Amino acid sequence: MSRPTIAAVARAAGVSVASVSRVLNGLPATEEMAERVRRAVAELGYVPDSRARSLKVGRTFQLTLAVADVGNPVYVTMMRAVEEVVSAAGYRLVVTTTGPDVADEVALVRGMARGYADGLVISPLRVDDDLIKSIQECDVPVVVAGNVPARAGVDTVRANSPKGMLLAVEHLLTTKRRKVAFVNGPVDTVPGAARAKGFADAMRTNKLTPVAEVAAEDFTFAAGRDAGRELLDENTELDAVIAANDLLAVGVMHELAARGLRVPDDVAVIGMDDSALAEQSFPPLTSVNLGSAERGRRAAELLLARIEDDSRTPRRIVVQPSLSVRRSS
Image 1: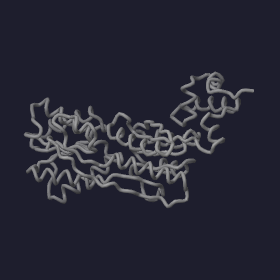
Image 2: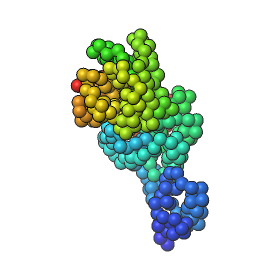
Image 3: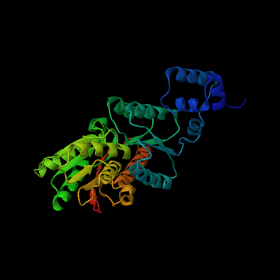
């Protein structure tokens, strides 16, 4: 008798194959759909192919990288670094997007129990107790490329955003810029909170008062353009803007250009992440390099080590920043 297929499960449940795949992979689905799929799986005795391979060889030789937005250049850089390390060790890399909702991050981590990968590197945009608990209870090793509390007891690799902000502010001071504004992303996110604190500390250390602080709706170019509009509508006395990432910074530069303001002659702009976008923008963007490639490499190495020895003491690695000075400042 042949093994039941995912198509057979879909027919029995009265849903699409894509819907079955979402439920089996732990992705968000309505409770009614999930129940129909679970019932069909139980009735047919369906076992996912990846789980079957796991039972035969003990591993799938597949790893997952989960990021908030695969369209963000910083995550592309991280992905390439992770892939380089894991492919050299004989693993395939599957990249998935969690989006901004922590509930979707939790669902993805819990979905790892389906057995389609041997481990997970996750870069969460938001962190709460449910996410920490799901990581701690995950059936496969998890490494966090980001910041979670030490009490979580998991391997982490994170950037030093506060030091990066200090580099940006001190660079502006060397160019005689003192009227500094800050365009952040959502402050309830991990990077948003870190950058907000870093900016405040850097300004205070240098005895400066911010001209303005604006929180964009997200970390995208469009949100940067909107934040730049809000900033410039309310503040004419500024000579520099620091943005929480390169996409926001380029959005601000577009708004400055639309108003006839020159970068850097009228307003200097600094981004964070030092992604490929920084060199591609016009003028080329000065940006804080937060070591996205290095963070990806270190996270991948930690995951491989954790797979080989799950009894290892969790490590918390901090990657130090540098400043890439270009024509925007």
